[in-house]
Length: 162
Ligand SMILES: [Zn+2]
Ligand SMILES: [Zn+2]
Image 1: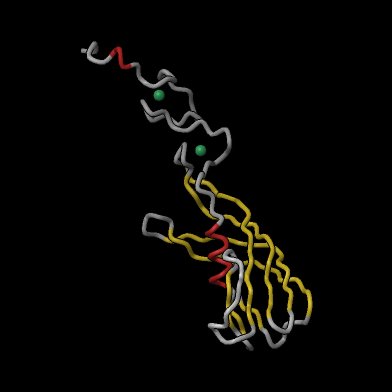
Image 2 (image 1 turned 30 degrees about the vertical axis):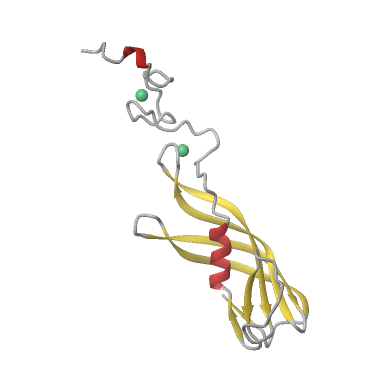
């Protein structure tokens, strides 16, 4: 999405975001990462701040049961558009995405996509109490209860089996 610096109202305004970004699904394919919400734009003489929290969702595979599900999380956005030529020295916080532009349209796709990817949870489970897959027989324990012992195999029995 684009933000036009020439028509942007001075001071504080709201920026409605409803975007879908392509992301690699880890298997060579692409899937869509949807980000939506309202960001705050603070437009001053020297810079424009775009900040807020977006609700993000993307297709994911559960770490425990390997079922596909829609992962939902929140991503913080912190973008600064500095109205100056690139290379202007500054002491901006490291978590902030910095763009240098004086006039015209600013493309926010890349910083918004990066913000959404940055907060992608490392642990992805379809639900907190997902029982996962049985390591012995491969049954999805959310679907059915298998007869396998819940504990890991007892090494004392090794070698006793025929
Ligand atoms: Zn699961
Ligand atoms: Zn089992």
